[in-house]
Image (cartoon, rainbow, N blue to C red; front, top):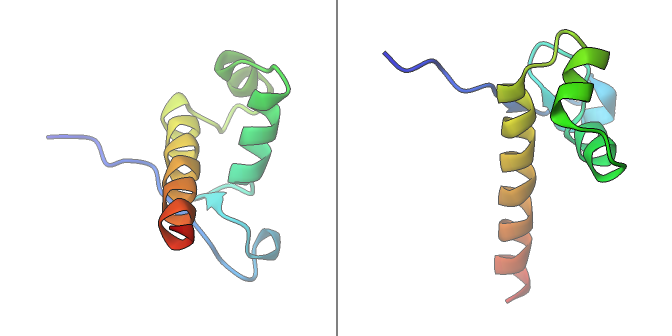
Length: 75
Protein backbone atom coordinates (compact mmCIF):
# COMPACT_ATOMS: atom_id res chain seq x y z
CA UNK A 1 0.00 0.00 0.00
CA UNK A 2 1.35 3.42 -1.00
CA UNK A 3 2.26 5.85 1.74
CA UNK A 4 0.02 8.94 1.71
CA UNK A 5 1.66 12.07 0.33
CA UNK A 6 2.34 14.95 2.68
CA UNK A 7 -0.26 17.67 2.38
CA UNK A 8 0.13 21.36 1.93
CA UNK A 9 -2.65 23.22 3.71
CA UNK A 10 -3.83 26.78 4.06
CA UNK A 11 -5.45 27.91 7.27
CA UNK A 12 -6.20 31.59 7.88
CA UNK A 13 -5.35 31.07 11.56
CA UNK A 14 -1.90 29.62 10.81
CA UNK A 15 0.98 31.66 9.43
CA UNK A 16 -1.40 34.32 8.11
CA UNK A 17 -2.99 31.81 5.74
CA UNK A 18 0.21 31.00 3.85
CA UNK A 19 0.46 27.44 2.49
CA UNK A 20 2.17 25.29 5.13
CA UNK A 21 3.25 21.71 5.48
CA UNK A 22 0.50 19.98 7.41
CA UNK A 23 1.31 19.50 11.07
CA UNK A 24 4.02 22.17 11.06
CA UNK A 25 4.37 25.92 10.94
CA UNK A 26 6.80 25.61 8.03
CA UNK A 27 5.57 27.48 4.96
CA UNK A 28 6.07 26.57 1.33
CA UNK A 29 7.53 30.05 0.90
CA UNK A 30 10.16 29.36 3.58
CA UNK A 31 11.17 26.06 1.96
CA UNK A 32 11.52 27.74 -1.44
CA UNK A 33 13.52 30.65 -0.03
CA UNK A 34 15.90 28.33 1.79
CA UNK A 35 16.48 26.19 -1.30
CA UNK A 36 16.86 29.26 -3.53
CA UNK A 37 19.37 30.63 -1.03
CA UNK A 38 21.58 27.60 -1.50
CA UNK A 39 20.52 25.28 1.32
CA UNK A 40 20.27 21.66 0.31
CA UNK A 41 17.36 19.40 1.16
CA UNK A 42 19.64 17.56 3.59
CA UNK A 43 20.61 20.82 5.31
CA UNK A 44 16.94 21.76 5.69
CA UNK A 45 16.14 18.39 7.21
CA UNK A 46 19.08 18.70 9.62
CA UNK A 47 18.08 22.23 10.63
CA UNK A 48 14.37 21.42 11.00
CA UNK A 49 14.08 17.81 12.25
CA UNK A 50 10.27 17.59 11.87
CA UNK A 51 10.75 18.22 8.13
CA UNK A 52 11.08 15.25 5.77
CA UNK A 53 12.29 14.90 2.20
CA UNK A 54 8.75 13.98 1.15
CA UNK A 55 7.39 17.19 2.69
CA UNK A 56 10.01 19.30 0.92
CA UNK A 57 9.14 17.58 -2.35
CA UNK A 58 5.44 18.24 -1.68
CA UNK A 59 6.24 21.94 -1.17
CA UNK A 60 8.10 22.01 -4.49
CA UNK A 61 5.21 20.28 -6.25
CA UNK A 62 2.77 22.75 -4.70
CA UNK A 63 4.84 25.67 -5.98
CA UNK A 64 5.08 24.16 -9.47
CA UNK A 65 1.30 23.66 -9.52
CA UNK A 66 0.78 27.28 -8.43
CA UNK A 67 3.01 28.56 -11.25
CA UNK A 68 1.18 26.38 -13.78
CA UNK A 69 -2.18 27.65 -12.56
CA UNK A 70 -0.97 31.26 -12.81
CA UNK A 71 0.26 30.70 -16.35
CA UNK A 72 -3.15 29.26 -17.36
CA UNK A 73 -4.94 32.27 -15.87
CA UNK A 74 -2.63 34.63 -17.75
CA UNK A 75 -3.04 32.88 -21.10
